[in-house]
Image 1: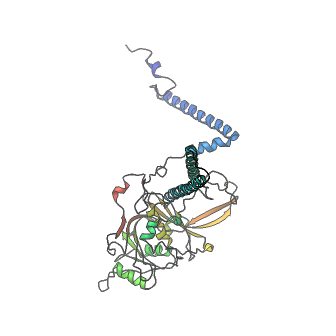
Image 2: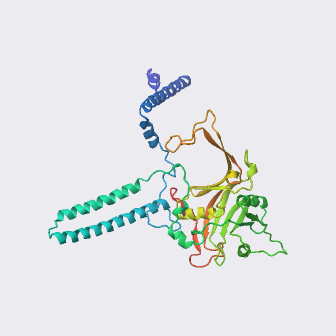
Image 3: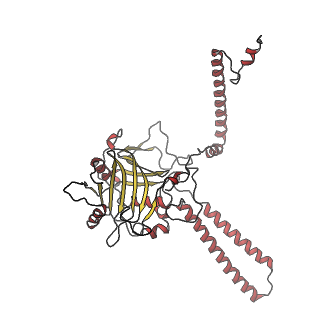
Length: 427
């Protein structure tokens, strides 16, 4: 015979002891959710009062509550090397080398000072205790440690929230491998020739891509039965003889842009190269964007974000040379190349500065403080298009795969095994 206390044991205020009555179970669930919500609101109210009295508590809480994204888990190669394919932060590597040079300079300076002091002491007296030598060694170590700490405590930049690429951090290895791309000469105005593969059909998309780059010309490439099928090397020679600085080839797949090859032609008496091959994903023309704007002939501004490794610096410099060095600010156009997890997101916008609405807050810095001089001002963006994503696949020394010769013909190539570790990136 079943016990009469069975129903009492299964009922209760906790969901761990569920009741068989559906209505009572629903009431218990609603009651529990209300209690949990009440506890959260009381906790937030108490925390708000404490942070109002001591603002440092809020700063500590926000500093500790950073989301642990893949970018924050990013790992770097622990090597003192700045060649292509090595995942090292160029700025951090240069900082470590500067610290090492300063430490060596401090040691040399201390050694010279100690020798001079020993000579003076020998001339005055033959007494020289070991304790004084130990004190000098301790002073030298303290000086080196102080220099290291001063170097580590760098002053924050004006806009620390940005991830702009600093091309001044170009490593010496890139300058030696690509002297025509990385030189101290003033940049020249680019002149770009854009074409497609043989029998290309994406003429409208190729024209839109060519319109992104100032001083560019699009020429259709045909493989007619009675026409001459020019190779890429012949086209590069033709373009170089007519003053073009870059040759760009747009590939297609299923009537959509699928690849982009950028060949730098360089100046006279200099062999062309390097060639960078990208794949294009998620291509979206400007007319397909909601509320899109119409482009103008003004030279745009260029933003390069997130390129940190030597390979990323090479890709950023390659794109940097295809835009004129003197943007026309009256056009208010900006081209953004944002690298994130080895994917380069391309966007083109038109911006306008306007007064902030009553419901909008002022612009703040990375620390959450209002930016000086930006009170009551907001920036509006209108995307012009097209919109697409690039991924670097190859870097060749000369004109593509077939036009590169020598042992170092292939500078870098993407391989599937590079993405086994999800926290390691090449750009």
